[in-house]
Length: 203
Image 1 (tube, rainbow, N blue to C red):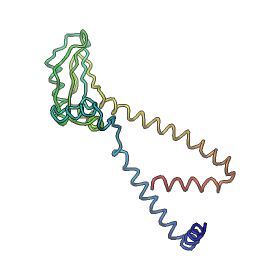
Image 2 (image 1 turned 120 degrees about the horizontal axis):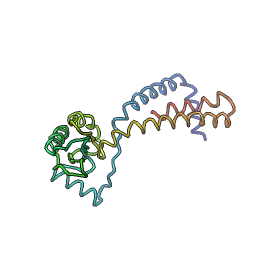
Image 3 (image 1 turned 60 degrees about the vertical axis):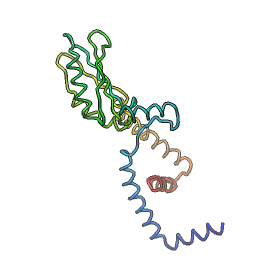
Image 4 (image 1 turned 90 degrees about the vertical axis):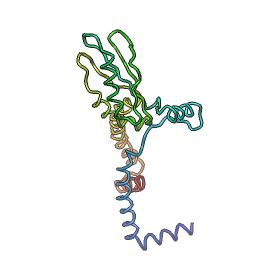
């Protein structure tokens, strides 16, 4: 209790310095938080597990990872499909990936061919290359072209996650303000915890 009283006196005595320090931390924390997104990724790995050891062997000896592989699917819109054309498209996509290599073309159904595009990149890193892979593959006359697989799905779903997060925050924010209003009853009482959270969380 005595320590808290002493700390409070120091803060009151140097309140201008304390406010400036918190303001500087808020600015720095906000800037740093804005740069945090590209450093975050979803990785489904369990160190030391059998599956992780298998992935490590695939990457070290065969220069590929199953969680970073793309799948090129080509569906005919009329005429027959040429496997050589599909293989060439897969090879173009593989050139955009580290240690990229296109597997042999397979037939999934009448009028549908597919090919795996392997890489040594991790899922998140491969996902960042999705637009380049799709651009390199391009279009095939007389067919619909799809590029799928774990990396492509993650790339395509990320905007949906961001939209859902924004929508959730838009709903949770007003609810939190209503709860604070109910608990504290005054505008000043609401501002203090909100300001404290706004400064401390980015810091």
